[in-house]
Length: 306
Ligand SMILES: Nc1nc2c(ncn2[C@@H]2O[C@H](COP(=O)(O)OP(=O)(O)OP(=O)(O)O)[C@@H](O)[C@H]2O)c(=O)[nH]1
Ligand SMILES: [Mg+2]
Image 1 (cartoon, helix red, strand yellow):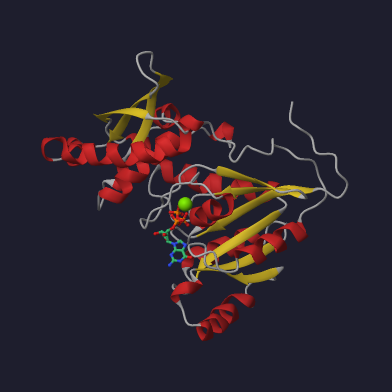
Image 2: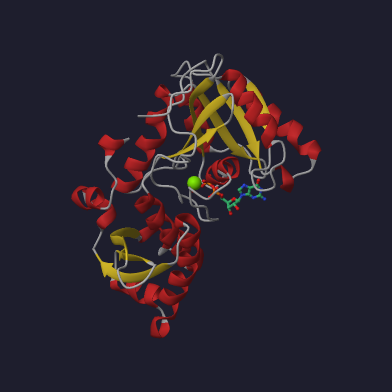
């Protein structure tokens, strides 16, 4: 049973963050939650699944939903990602449409605004990365977007540096209805630890590789259990790639790349689990997995769960 908070005037609700790839949606969620639950990278299309971050305060519970960046799908995985992003819009109490202050208006935004016009939910325009532009430029960005949709609020922030994020959080609370506490106060995400562990490994590959490699991988956790000989948690994971050339890149010269991925991932996983970790990584080729529905399901991309 959840620890229901019955205090009067307690507010709660679901808030979906939508936007083009790379605008900083995952960075914002992590900033609010104060821990890395959604992986981040400078490569577009980092987020693939819906990730919920839960923030509980004395007077409210905000469930923030991170979604994959809106882009034109090139394979079945891309189709899945777009459905995950747009399906959430109907079911939430508030939508944050996030844009990047550095880039101007783009085709992806046009598509998102068309989607927004089909729902009744209030929408905030959140202009992120203001640490990278001169304040004068903000006015022209606001002008570009203001005429396209009747936004409930327009809020410039820097998710990375935390500028104005308190104000945004207050505005979110103002728009939420009175409601129950859905999750226990100490729960920060709806995803099982296994999922986040797999994502942390994928994040390191995203950071360390280039070109087609980052997008062609999936990570599957084969085993995660406390080892009997030591206090460590034994994590065994397989990195799936599409071609044997990519397998070579991920393993690296004499295993150097895989070793580096493992070293960096282990530190993050230890942080997440609060325990020492023994991380064992394998690499396997599964041709064209991003286009095979059965494989997508095997790797955890299940639409019925979203
Ligand atoms: N300068 C600056 N960089 C930021 C800010 N917020 C995010 N970034 C950077 O922008 C890049 C993309 O951030 P993510 O949070 O992964 O973006 P996303 O919108 O989740 O991207 P997808 O999951 O691919 O849709 C990362 O390199 C972040 O460090 C910000 O406020 N200022
Ligand atoms: Mg993301």
